[in-house]
Length: 145
Image (cartoon, helix red, strand yellow):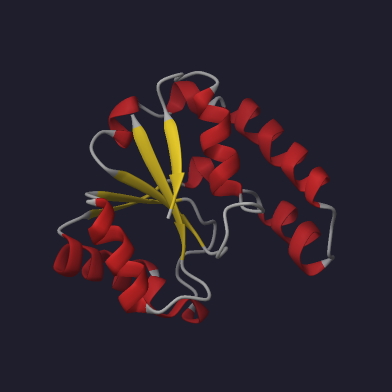
């Protein structure tokens, strides 16, 4: 099962939706805690759902079980925290939430992409979420758009 990830910062709407179309994505799973900020431009929750349907024929799903907590985000972003500490806390959170039992594999059926804001997946929780789930669903393969 191939699952994609994508970030929306540092990219144009044309490039963003073009990458989704090229990958044949049919479902976008938003793993952001805050998905309605005016700063998100074309990736604001309600607008994104519309654009996905119209431009890609894809569904929009918000999955807060895969989002970090506000405290974690603030410690890492606002207080310039350590990535290794953020990573450890986030993976612990997924374990406590038991996301592997709370989420069905059908969420990832068909071409699916996880969305967060970070331009690169290297330091983003969307990559960590897939790494965590791959421990339980061994046939999952991540591809970063």
